[in-house]
Image (cartoon, rainbow, N blue to C red; front, side):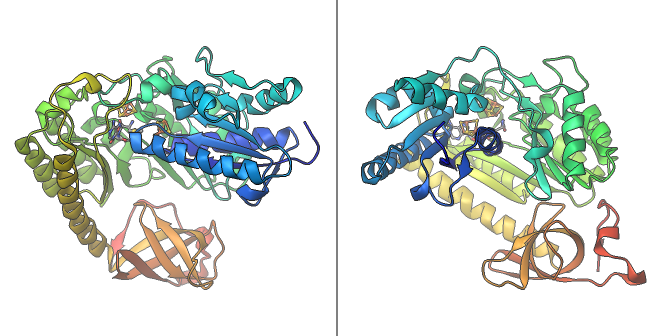
Length: 457
Ligand code: SAM
Ligand code: SF4
Ligand code: F3S
């Protein structure tokens, strides 16, 4: 490696990609690279990409055009590394269109990036690593801490093959990290001051099925016992792999935050079957009912796709009705996008884009009203909050997060990583605002007991 070189990583896509970027940064630092403070100053640009919808790919192509202009202006050579899902899907084609890309690192090769760059620099020949033969989990463990929070990949890949989704083709089949390694990683993170961890996987609750290791719920039970850890979150759960019994078991774990992200995708059983989701609306509701019964006042968020091939007005009405009656705290809503390799791309009856766009607008406006109602229900509540970072608008205010994953702006002098007790007092726009509560009996915020019970004042 040439001396003193700096890198900049731009990341698109899901939490898994963001987590992979943490490992890429650590591996580059291990090889002597420094973080650049801006993209313009970097000698090495890593573009970690997402291919889940066509629009996401178009954005990446736009960014490559911008990097070309940076390359033309630069004194020396800027090495561009394309990694992540677009690299896996069509890195070779993009390398032909953009010769500035010197390294393609597919989704099994994040950790190889420094070695691939060295290979390019030694030979001057662009390097491609996009096979999916053997997957290695990161071993950076405690070094992956980002302040008081950390993301821990417990399972990679997806074996579900939802008919619209490109992810299994780009990330491979499910592979679970060993439970001993997960527990060791979390213990090391906690020793470094992490108080909140988020377990990651495309299908996190399928943990252990591929390997025969302990199940997801058993893993949660063991993680719950780690001293010093306060909050446990997980993303994303597949509704098929949950049932009321499992929810009841999870509800007994006080460190598990009362927030479930449970993608519904459609409220029509006919469309769910065409999507190959392997559950019905009634199963989904049974899980939602169990969450609400056993996990006091839990938040539930979801993902929904509109305009899936053959979705009729009646199917869409069923989605609206489901959203109206379940009352999700929030929803990520998408217009169906036709993706290569997927079965749905071959379905006839693709819904015209203007029809899908209209449905999306209607769904968004319904969900906005519900999200506002759910947030209004938070006003007046006494909550435990984790202080995250200073607000951009005022140095005396901090963005804090509740167990239900709601951001609350609170004036406080407590540093990031502290737990505070607060009362939510108002909502302005869609932003919750709170005031810190003094704790009786001279308790410090760090003495606040782990969450689990919320009292309403
Ligand atoms: N594994 C998670 C699950 O099954 O719920 C979701 C992971 S996926 C990366 C995130 C979301 O993208 C999905 O829940 C789905 O709503 C959306 N998505 C995936 N493929 C899509 C497509 N072809 N068009 C539109 N949205 C899509
Ligand atoms: Fe895609 Fe379905 Fe796997 Fe989620 S569960 S990543 S939507 S194939
Ligand atoms: Fe996108 Fe790949 Fe994640 S397609 S959503 S970055 S797994």
